[in-house]
Amino acid sequence: MTAKDASAVSLMQEANDALGDSAELRRRLDEQGYIFLRQIMAKDKLLSLRQEMTEVLMEAGWLVAGTNPMDGIARIDAQCTEGDPEYAEVYHRVYSLGHWPEVLSVMEQVVGGSVLPHPQKIARLWFPQYTEHTTPMHQDFVHFQGSFNTYTFWAPVGDCPLELGGLAVLPGSHKIGKVREHHFSLGAGGLAVDESELTGRWLSANYEAGDALIFPSLTVHQALPNYTEDRLRISLDNRYQAQGEPIAQHMLDPHLTGVTGFNWDACYAGWQSESLQYYWQDLDLEVVPQLSRWGDQGFAEALSLARDGDERALYQLRRIARRDPESERGQQALQLLHEVNV
Image 1: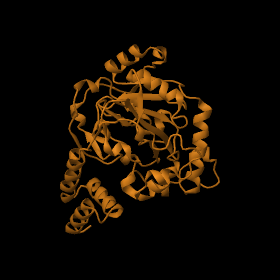
Image 2: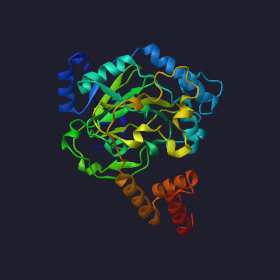
Image 3: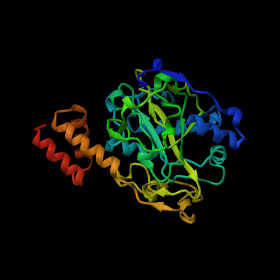
């Protein structure tokens, strides 16, 4: 059952009563495939971060001039999404996020010991009236890999009611114990599981600043569409795992580094402190290669669909060709677009 609008979801159970009880938090994660926590981060800290981020977005022309940046009133003609060069150029200016003690405390309870925050941290910036690019239903493992025992910590930067497009999870979907087949899709990550293989009712929430949703890498989840008229949805994705679990090589790089060549030196250029810079390099990590099988399959499907005139696939190939025309995929995209004369 897909979660195309707020009427298709039920509300998640809150787990604040289990805070401080590591065994109970892990039991609920094992049973439900998620834990939802209210107000575990100071709201004023989240709103201060939102102020910084929205001021950058206003300067970049993503928000309507003359409005309060904190309101996040988006310029519809500035629409873009992950994978577009315009997105990456703005995105990396709001990349520097701290390791907040209250977050690390919760994640230590979740993993039952010392926790490794992934160096790759993600800010999600989603435009309204752009629902065809809503993040599709998927498992995170196909993207960050490494270990099944890796957890996503998702938090809205500002209040996020259902209509603004927060995350929805499919409870119990992690119990399959393996990576499901994923296929080409628009939206962040470009991969989706087959809706016909899923059962159950989607769960979400009217999120508030300070809330967090935590789930393991096999839980099927998706974003709800941003059905607001003009509001940008801003959120943070951080990943955590127990120290000692394997981590994929690409998770040691900045997000979207392949789009612009953005690196850690550029990320750290404006930082006032060196305390969190390259923190993982002093740890004894088991680093494993990134697997390309899921991305390769999705791209092959996009090529096949584009040959048959699928507009979603053609759109994706145009983006790839524009973004990275000299790469192998860029060359393949350009060749196919030429063949079909678009």
